[in-house]
Image (cartoon, rainbow, N blue to C red; front, side):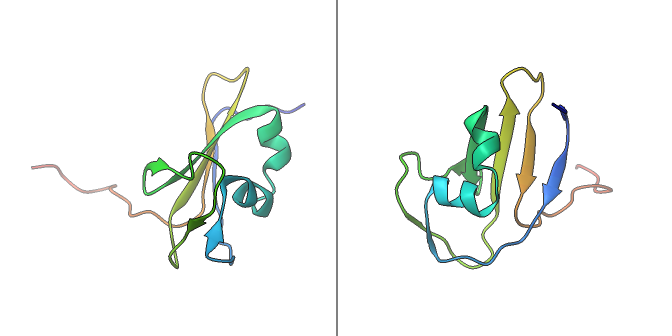
Length: 92
């Protein structure tokens, strides 16, 4: 089994507006990976559907699925929408 310790992937999906954590994992084809790993789904930086109930999603929501292997030191994650880059910006 191949182990990835630090990777990310950007994907875009079209789906119904009412979704649950398990339905998002099925759509992204991560159900199998999350059955043997620890997965966390976040929406705007907050846990998504803490109990597996349906949540309403606006168009172009930024959902991040963090996948952490039970034996990996670092977690992998997939970003489903684009996030602004802070590269090249100076802090005041």
